[in-house]
Amino acid sequence: MDPGDAAVVAGAIAGAVALLGTIGGAFTGRWASREQAREQGRIQHRQWLRDHQRIAYADLHAIAVDTVELAGTFAQASGPAAADAGKNLTASLYKLVRAGATVGIVGPDKMKRLAAGLVGNAYKTPGSPDAEPTWELWAAALNVKLTEFSTEANKIISETPGSETVPAAD
Image (tube, rainbow, N blue to C red; front, side, top):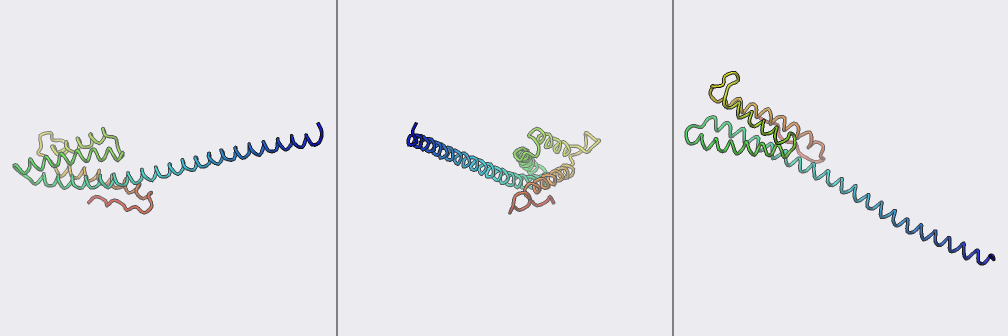
């Protein structure tokens, strides 16, 4: 092979290597862009989860406060007003169970047991199965749970910059 042919072959090889480098660089750039987009998506998803939890905790807190107030209304009501107050309290308990399960502090089964335990406390004084309802015990137990929910909510909310905390139970 003469020197001119060798230069042409060398030039062709160099051109092919440069072309492969350009193609490889394009694929590397596309891969890096995809990874960057995936990471940005993960960050946005985590932020959405935090926002969702913050809203769910605030909803749970509001429902629990309403439930405590309804328990007080039920405890003071009599006759037909007691029946209405009981229906409102039952509906609020149902919402409380669903909200607690949505937040995910505890699973739905544990929330149902919590509600059943609170209702059970309302119908008897500890150690006396035939005693009158003790709504004060029920409201106190619910208030303790509400304080736990508020503490957990504030822990998660504090991890979200610019978020407000949930007020503690009264």
